[in-house]
Length: 92
Image (cartoon, rainbow, N blue to C red; front, top):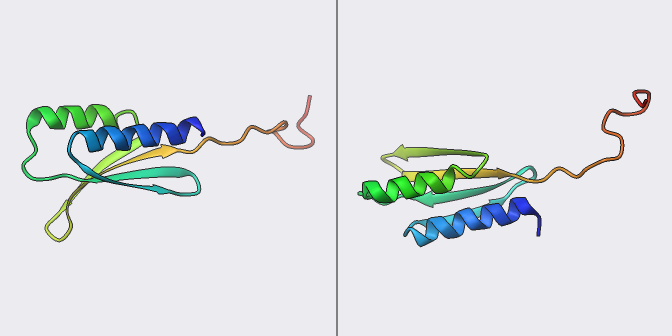
């Protein structure tokens, strides 16, 4: 399993352990993790949640009257290494 997938699964598991319901989705360039945030959420739990999502490459929070409060995080997928990243004609 690639390290990026392991990171995403770890983030989702840790958010679940904090009592949040998570969803994980694979995309072409990243894995997204979303979690519904109940109201109220104790300040100590918020600190722990922020420590967890800080390990992602990107994260954010969306709150609306229609959809509630959703925390998201994204972990970039590993880019396969190539032998010649500069292309032909740029070799030394």
